[in-house]
Length: 176
Image (cartoon, rainbow, N blue to C red; front, side, top):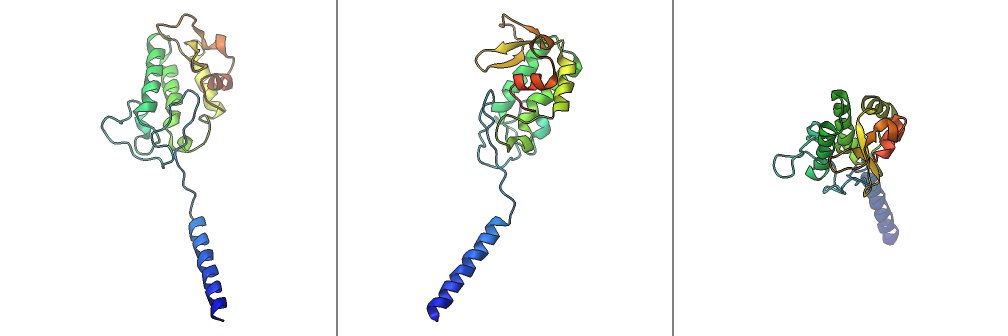
């Protein structure tokens, strides 16, 4: 009888522990995007607040209260926006939308999803409409379209590289 009681007690204990650990929300942790995007230093950890200092966001400050990003992600985004402003001949609307696109990697909802950042097709269409006449080049190393820089030999308007917003986002390393 004692053995049966212990077996039942152990079963109930294990059952209780299973319910306790499986009833909570799954931990949503940062998952690096791959492709042209540098790995998150917070890989495997939940998005968190980024404080001031060396790891502070240089761009994408909108997400500083909860993000997977640090300067490793925002510095390349900042360079991309700067290139678009200086040699890409982009409109102000294009610059603003391109910055939002580049900063999407810092959105805590995107940071916890596997794979390239998932962007709404309607937003990609807005970026394309605003940036169709801005100049881009193909980054041979990363195999993505990027704003034209001073050292790029072949530059063309976005509308010469792609024909719609979905193509632009895909060519820039995002998915719709």
